[in-house]
Image (cartoon, rainbow, N blue to C red; front, side):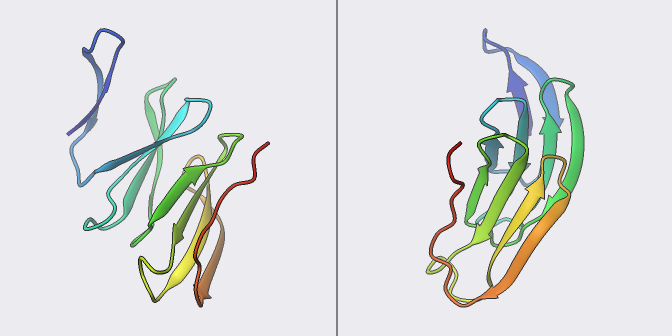
Length: 117
């Protein structure tokens, strides 16, 4: 079960239950992704903290790297080497879970990063 807490440590909003073990916050703090990675299937839920609405669902199986862009509008997920020696790929998602760009079959992807603003 996942919850948002207020500054007093009280649960202010429940995000529901599911196979989640990761939260990735956007730099501006409005958007976040709740996901299940590692030994979980890579399901992601995209949320807007301000409105407390789920914006979308997506899946990124085997993703090792996950990070929002400096502008908070895009999420980068990547399957990197040597964490996984096959199927290295990267995907850029819009803040609502819409996939914008995917590059698959990369021989050895060691690292992905956003350039700072």
